[in-house]
Length: 138
Image 1 (spheres, rainbow, N blue to C red):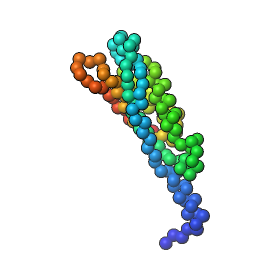
Image 2: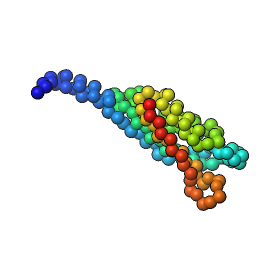
Image 3: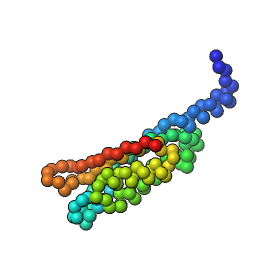
Image 4: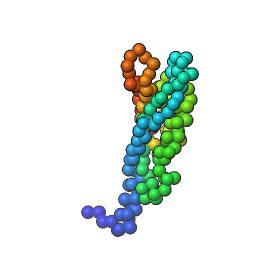
């Protein structure tokens, strides 16, 4: 049987906690944007909902209780809002920009899933929304 001293055991637990995964969800981020292939969409715009899920290492944030040690959901929301403000023809292009930026700006993030939904899309039918979902792992 392996014997640990209390101090060594505490250090081991703290070290292992660096590798605990955390999942963060941002649900229904509301945006008004100008995405679409129709000329009217780039002029009139429409309502969008973005759902974001990221997974990454908890790191020291649980012990330090400091924002600098955490994956900051305020920053994640800011990235979504900024990328949604850049007009694109396809929702896939917007979602890909969101994925790429999050992985570029925070090395603790290991996986990103984003779903972009256009509310009341201009298609011939009574459709509440159309959505695309993209995922990427580091």
